[in-house]
Image (cartoon, rainbow, N blue to C red; front, top):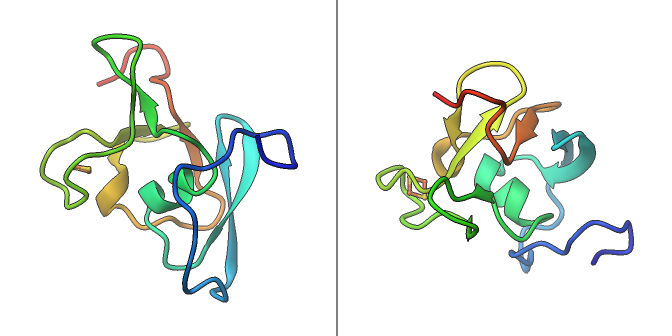
Amino acid sequence: MSAAGHPAGRLVRLAETNRAPMRFVLDGAERQALAGDTVLSAILSVAPALRHSEFGVETRAGFCLMGACQDCWVWQEEGPRIRACSTPLTEGMRLLTDAPGDWS
Ligand code: FES
């Protein structure tokens, strides 16, 4: 757990930590990332996984990290689901780790 009570991130930032901060919302909680992050790096720096598997109880954190395997789908509160590894994070993005009802 982080000091803020959130689960610790899977990724630990070791370099480029002086980039400008950006805010985003993950499952209703405001989080912080850094300018230039992909959605995947933003989420995994504050959470242990990107999403739950649609096939079981496991969680997923991406596999290929280059837009080919589709293991990193995450959902936006509004709009289409996105591949986290190939989508740049934008300020204020509102993301979900579980599908909002019908996930298509
Ligand atoms: S991790 Fe494979 S498509 Fe994103």
